[in-house]
Length: 379
Image (cartoon, rainbow, N blue to C red; front, side):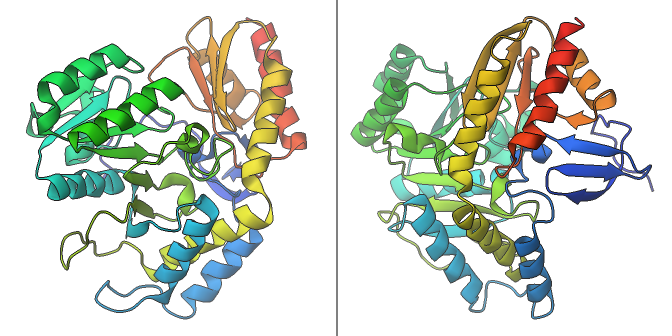
């Protein structure tokens, strides 16, 4: 049997990782400045993370959600305290797409409405409803398409108001990323988020903040939307939550009532996943990683802002989009194959996406800065 060939692959096979570095099967060393799409939040193989997973593996790795699991309670309590959402409830699942699916579903259960408003440039996942609110027709199959899903332009308040004026009584929820990642590090304005919140309250629609990529300290806030003082009805999270172990979650406002069987999952919130997620929160707190994300993000921007071929820098904390005056693909390849540095791209072909671990230091950061300058100087 062969693998189903859906991923364009670099000819690199990492077999070992530590901190912000990877080594391939040929012994070559690489600087990881992308973290597997912002998944690696506390660095590869952090000692506390390793210890917690090993210890949990020796106890119990899995049982279903038909029994008590004290690790889930511990995770919910620590996440509530560190994020500032102690009065919310937590539903655990396995991925960002699954978190968004459950948030959309819960909103519809709550208000009995069926339409969902989403935005241009968005990416919310590849599963049924999540891909239907993703702005990429290439990955939306006919079975996923429905007129219930309404697209509005990013940061366009007038269009937002017009849609609510005509369809507001049918809109169940509005889903928006705290910062668009795949869309090219697009940041919502404070006025835009405030208007969405206002209209959701007026028309009894749920506001879902997708913080799958922009959450967990990446923006310099625990969740990116917290910079603007917005309180969503639900917050979805995943990528940095488990530092590579699959886990996702929905933080749910207390106004939503739970009932047996309303939501469910086989693997969500399993013992190993919770151990990984608790370890991440412990390290984030002990090492002040949210603050480090802001500090190192500021440092990167200040160091590279005058480099040639950079048109703009879109950034909050360590969620960074470097907009070039050309397609970034050759720059990205040069960084990878000449300087051995992993970076990312986006749907905006000119944007180089930077998502290093939140505990990245200046020494590793300087390797990236010097390499980027060398590549851009040669263009």
